Image (cartoon, rainbow, N blue to C red):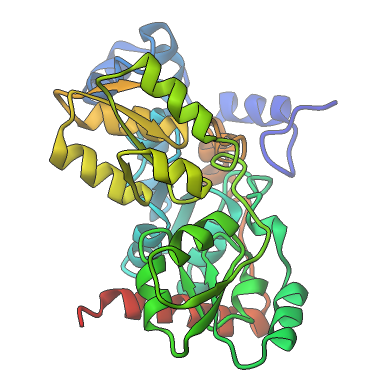
Length: 355
C-alpha cells in the first residue's frame, strides 16, 4: 500500500518536493530560532527527534506569514504542533469562537474534518485547509442528516441539540449545536421539557443526570473515551493512590461517577491549573495530557489515556505540505453552509449569555 501524506498525494512524492522547496536540515540557526519552543517540550520530545521537527516548525512559521495564514489547533494535537506552530489552541468551542475572529485570509485547521468544516461555515469567504482530509471522527461518522430527519419525524416538535462533532450536513438539520463545555447550559436553554441530544450517547447520558429535562439520545460514541471503564479507574486508583483522576464527559457515566472531576478539555485544563494537584491522571487523549504538562509546573502527570488515530493524521510534514500547495481545501455546499452556520452561531450566542 502506498503511504500518503494526505488523501491526495503519495508521501514519497510530497517529501521529494518539500526537500527541493525548503531547507529542512537542522542548522545552528534553526536550533537558535526554535530553542524557546524546545524548552517547553523537551520533557515530551527527545532531543534526537527535535532535529527532525525543528526545521519543519521553522519553515511552517515562516510560510504561514507569507501565505497570510493562521493555524488553529485542537488540544489533542501533538506537542510539536500545539506548541510549535499553532496560533490558536483550544477545545471545539474555543476554536469555533476564535474562528470568527481571525483576520488572516487562510485558516489551517489542525484537528479533524468536522472542525475544519466549522471554521469554513463561520468564515465562508476565507480559504480553509485541513492537512489531511482523512482525519475523521467516530462521532461524526455515527449519524447522517437523514438519521436526524427520521428522529424529527419520530419526535415532532422536540428541539435537536447536536454535538459539534458532526458533519455540516447534520448541523444543517439541527436547531442548535453544543460542545462538552456548554452541553448542559444549551440543553437547559432550549424550549420544552424534552430534548434530543445527539450523537454522543455518553455526553447525553451524563448531561441528563444534571438536568430536569428528558433527554433522547443516539447511539454514537467517541472511540477514544468510550473504551474507558469503571474498572480502569479502580486500577488507576490502586496504582496511583495519591493521584487525582479527571475525565471527559464523553466517557461512560460509570466512569464519570468514579473520578474526582469531569469536564470538557478546557474545563480539565482549568481545573488542573487552578487546583494544582501534586499528581493527576487525565482520562482522555494522550497528547492533551502532554500539552497541559508542558504548560503546568508543580504537577506530576501520570499516564491513563488513549490516542486518537484521527487527530494523529495531522503532522508537521502535512501541515507544511498543506501551506506549500494550499491543499486540502474544505468546501461546503451552499444549501448546507447557511443553516449549518446558524446552528453553530446559535450555540456561540447562547454560550455568551450570562443570564
